[in-house]
Length: 342
Picture 1: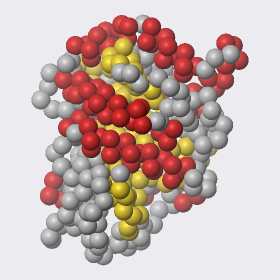
Picture 2: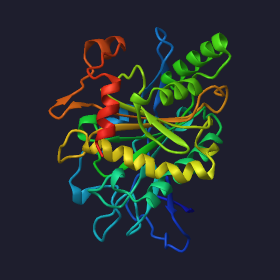
Picture 3: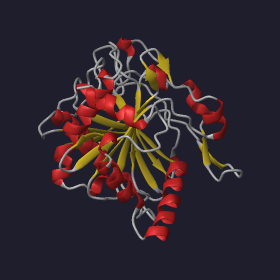
Picture 4: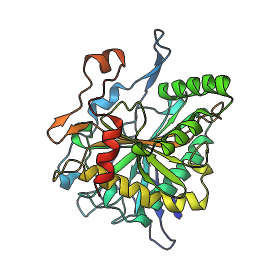
């Protein structure tokens, strides 16, 4: 991997990730951009202990622009974008409309490909590996920033998820406090350690691998399985067999195997409902906090909001109001259907 660091016209950082050195990354951003003015505020909900980001400036962010005005495509003559280069492999830049910035954290956009109508599932294994290397590099750099407590790499895909830019991309958040779901994970892991003397996530992986009916894919270094108490109708967790804290701790064998398994998994999601359009999903890397997160194991959680070809899983009264999920599909059935979606 080769990285080139540069700046956009308003001073935001832009990083090109290339599979090899030698690419010309000297194109300048000539847009007349004003400096980014954002002041997200973190407020703590006293009733739950959760932190909520108040980011009112995001109301004016770009919303589903026409393809010829996409800000994530490479720049063309007369059509400048967030990527000044005429082509790129993988690019990462600071979000112009961040949910978190300054003392509240940092938000970055990860462009997986210059192809506007493509998707992660259409990447080659080599390009998927480059994305993994970019995630890893950003995890290392952001984790070292003062105030960062957790780095979260994720992708939202599909209008049904609420994506406002259809170009294939993900995001990276540097949180200044561990996310609420991570706090729950750590509490459960501490209770499990106290009760059994073992690590919760190692036991969850061992239990899933022993229950073959919930395994979707398995390699030498990774296993993808539907969790026993899945919240979403089609939800898969992907774990490395060796417990590590975050992406920076993966060894070369684990990195080499990941792209093939992950691409296979995404393509199974796309085939699951027999539809022409891609399946909407959220793909989320869960990484340990930079301090006090030793019990949390790196893993990826992937789920779709679609529960049938013509039905979406809406978060209604129980889920939205009480955070009490009701699943319409048995986890064992979901795993079988994903195994069959070859």
